[in-house]
Length: 371
Image (cartoon, rainbow, N blue to C red):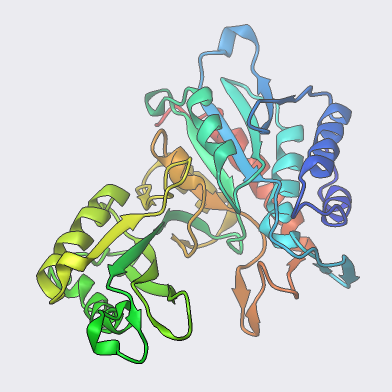
């Protein structure tokens, strides 16, 4: 079995905010030491599989997934008692260490177990977008996915989605000395921002999800104008959307344009479009609490079943098979942000506990006949 704490400390000392190649090499070497030969596909995913003997090969396919990359900047590694500080300590090298240890110690009785680690979860998710179709997940066979993120050992069976787009407001340029001769796009943005605050009131609360709560719509960037002495002809408002089921990215785009047409006096000069990207947006998902992967992990961990508060690549997997998010570490604690912050840390006993929980859960899931 891989020692999760030894691997974790080496992993956190390995920068992976600009280039994940060193982390990829570290993970591949550790898997080879454990007797498993990994592959790296064209999208940069590191994939390793352990299978039952041929007589039991038709059992479930259980996938452990997390990511190699971290956000900038790199934070030096520091040990403080039971805490390990450093970039990626909890997001998501702590979960990776626990998954690697559990993967290396599990001999499937039925079916197969895959460890699949993506290279760019924090940015474009091209790895996950390419990976998911290749896994050929079948929920009727009992296939299940566990995505490693810092959940404090709770079992997270749902998460909001995240969409991004821009409201474009078109005016008319003019000399700033004669502003009345043009149409100031920045001034025109004010009623648009005011209207956006009422977008989720339009259905009298029907958008509120019983577990995830209400969706949010947040203007995050306002940009416009080309010169300090010119009435601006264009202004853009970047929007961050945190969605709840059943809203899709395309449905949100249509609904917001219809809403702006109704609520903004100058609607003919206002339009909204989703940001162009090469991979699908991370949409909201929910796995029912009575599905076996939720039940098994809850029983093994003793943790709560709750939503995850951030959008993750679990969204892609959940379209194909029941998916949960689980791992050591916390996004934030009573003192403030932890993940993505300069004080990022993970509790080492929690990493060891996560490895044990995952090992116990995998043994059960690879025997499980109740799908």
